[in-house]
Length: 503
Image 1 (cartoon, one colour):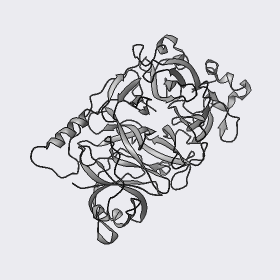
Image 2 (tube, helix red, strand yellow; image 1 turned 45 degrees about the horizontal axis):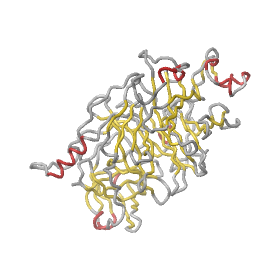
Image 3 (cartoon, one colour; image 1 turned 120 degrees about the vertical axis):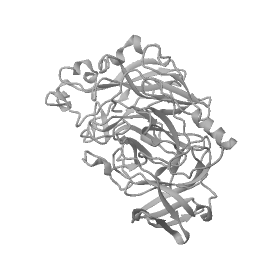
Image 4 (cartoon, one colour; image 1 turned 90 degrees about the horizontal axis):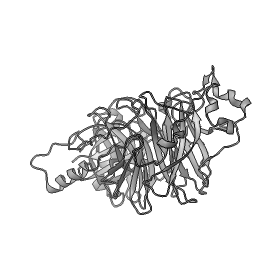
C-alpha cells in the first residue's frame, strides 16, 4: 500500500453501527433481537489495516495487518487483538528488532521509525510451518520484501531474510541482493536518469502468496510504480524461483501481470478457485486515505501467469485512464442500517472456508478521520465465472441464495451503482422497483429498464439504462441482524450494482 501515515500504529476505537442512511425511521424502543444485534455489531470492531485472512488448523480465524497488527476470532464476527504496534515488544516476532536485516536496506521512515506493512501468513504444506511474508519501506519506492517462519500461527515468527529490494540507485544497488541474481552489466535496465525507474519496475510491497492448481507456490506483489508482479516461490526454502527473462518477465522482479507508469494499482491478491478453475486477481485502485477513492477491482485468468482480463476482456497496461479497466467491486457507499458511509474500502484478501468464499478488507468512514476497521464480506460465484460481493458484511452464516421466489423478489429496493470512477464521492442509494412484467421503474433515467429472474439458479439479469447486468439474488442479515433480500450484479462495462430491499 502507498501510505502517508507510517510508524507506530495506534489502536483505534471501533465505530458503533446504528440504523440510519436511507432506511425508513422506526418508532418505539428497539426489540430484544435488535438490541442483541447492536451488541454483536459493536463487539466486531478492531483496527487491522490491509487485513489478510487465514484459518488455523484448530479452526480459529486470524487477521494479520500493517504495523504488526493481528486479531483472532472463533466466528469471523467477534475479533480480539493480540498484537499491535511496530517494535521489539510486539509478540509476533522474536528477532525482527535484534537481527535488523529487514531494515538494513530501507532504513527508517520519515517519522524516524520503522515501517512494517501488509503481512500475509500462509501455511506451508511441505514444511508444516507458517510463513509470514511482509514488507519494510521508507519511501514510495524504497522497499524490501521479507519473510519469517513459525511453528505456531500466532508466532513468534523468526525473521529469515529479505528476498526482493526496490528503489535502488547506481550508488545503493550494492546494498541489495540484486548482484546475487543479475550480472552487473545488466543493472542499467533498472535506472532512468541515474535513479530508479519506477515507471517500469515495482515498489516491492504488498506480498501475497497462494497455491496454484498444481500445488506450486507463488507470490504476487507490487504497488503503483511499475505495476503488479509475480514470482514463483520455492516451497522448501521460501525463496523466489527467479525466471528467465522474456518480454513480460524480468529475472529479478519476475513477471509483470498488470499496471505500470505509476498509476494507482496495489494490494494484489490472487485466489485460485477450485470450483470454477479461474485465477482471480484482486487489486486496489486510488489512494488509501478516506477521500482517496480507494476501491477493489477484479481481473481473472485461466492461467496463473496470465493474461488477467476484466469482464470487458481488457488487461491493464500503462493506460492513463486506468479507471476504465478492472471490474469495480466497491466504492464509497452507504446503505440502510449503517449510520456512517463506508469510505475507501480496499486492500482485500480472499479465503475459501468450508462452505463459503469470503473476502476481508479494511474500510474508513465519513466520520472519525482516518480511523479504520476490517470487514468480512461473502463472495458469490456467477454462472459466467465472475465473482460479486454481498452488500452487507458477513454475519457468521452464509447468505441464502436458493428458494427465493419471483414473488419475494418483486418490490421496492434501494440501489447503488458503484460506477467506475476513482473519486471521494459517496454513492448513495436510489429507489427502484422490480415491477410486474419484468420492468425496472425509477425516477432516475439511467436506472430504468428490464429484469428477469431464474428461480432455479438464483441469478437475475437486468438492463439498466441500456447497460446489461448479471447477478445473484440473496438473503442476508443487514448490519442490525435483520434478514434482507439483496441483489449483487456486475456488468461487462465493469460496473457493479447492489440493491437491498427496503424495510
